[in-house]
Structure formats: structure tokens, C-alpha cells
Amino acid sequence: MRRYNPAFDQGLWYGVELSKPTMVVKSLEVRYKGKPYFPRGRGVYADLAEVNRIWFQRLKDGKVRLVIEGGDAHGSYRAYLTFKRDELVQRRVEHGEFPNNFYEETRYVNIPVED
Image 1 (tube, one colour):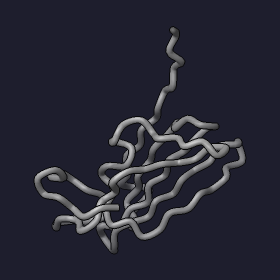
Image 2: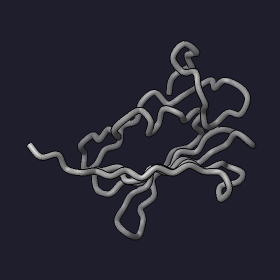
Image 3: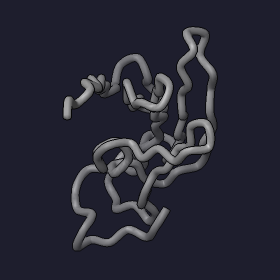
């Protein structure tokens, strides 16, 4: 986390409604089998602010989900980052009060690059 910087951080944020956030996610590092894994692109975490809680869930299909919860009342959200082994495969951000009505979802395709 870091303090909000208006020169750099202007835009829309999860976690606040009509005001500027006080704290925003600066970076995200996940470790898989002891090795650091950095999700590609700031877009995975850069719009999340006012984080309250973070935890992991192990899913039945072998995937792991990082849950990030933030904001308050009408500005609240829950972000789900789903990993399969060491790859990010999905990001879903739900509205805290109306998760089935207001959400955005991104699916990532990880195609191996040939040398």
C-alpha cells in the first residue's frame, strides 16, 4: 500500500465512491512454491484502494484464489485473483453490497512464447 498521489493516480477506484482514496495498492507479489510471481500488468491491482483484508482460498479444481476486500459501505468491493499453478487466469471484482449485479471480470490467456 502507498498514499494516493493525485498526479499519478487520477481515475476510477474500487473502494471509494465520490472521494479520492487515501491508500492505494502499490504492488502485488504472490509466491508459488517459494518463488516470487508478479502478475503481469498493473491493471491486475492498480485500481484497488482502501484494502481491509487479504486471504487465500484453495479451490476444488486445484486453483488458488487471492481475495482482496476493501472499501466501506456503498464503496466496498471484493476482488478475486484466481491462479492455476503459477499463472493468473482470472480477475473478478464485485461490488460489496450487490455482488451479483455489479462486477467486472477479466480472463487471462497465457500462451507460451516460442524462442
